[in-house]
Amino acid sequence: MILCSPYGNKIYSTKMKLLGKDKTDAFKTKHAMARSQIAAWVTEVEKATWSTPHHMKARYPTADPIGSLNTVFNICGNKYRIWVQISYEHQIVNIKAVGTHEEYEKWNIK
Image 1 (tube, one colour):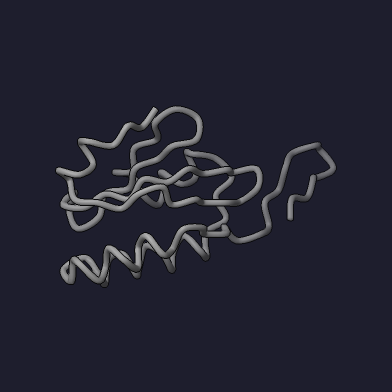
Image 2 (cartoon, rainbow, N blue to C red):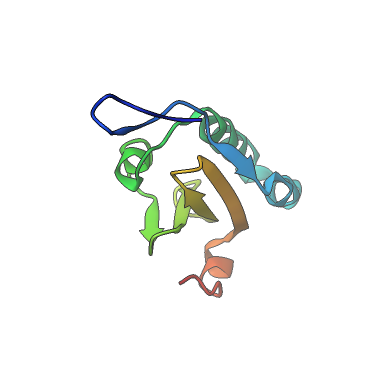
C-alpha cells in the first residue's frame, strides 16, 4: 500500500513482495555453502520497505543497481550473485537469476 503525506510525498508502508523464490530454493539445493546467507537475504527482503535504490543501498552497500530496474546482490563475499528487478513504487522484488560469480558474467543484464 502506498500512502501520501499531506506534503504529497509517497510513504511506503507495505513490505516488499518477493517473486521467484523457486530460483533461490533450487540454487540452495545445489550450493550448500550459500544456504544460510540466501535464506537470510530472502527473509530481509520480505521484511524490507525500500522506497528508493538509495534506501536499499543503505542496507546492502555492495549491491549493484544496473539501470532503473535491475540490481545484483553479492552473496557469500561475492562468490554468488542474485539478479533481481525491483519496483520500488509497487514494493515488488522479482528474482531473475541466482548463480555463481562465473555464471553472473554470462547474464545479459541491461
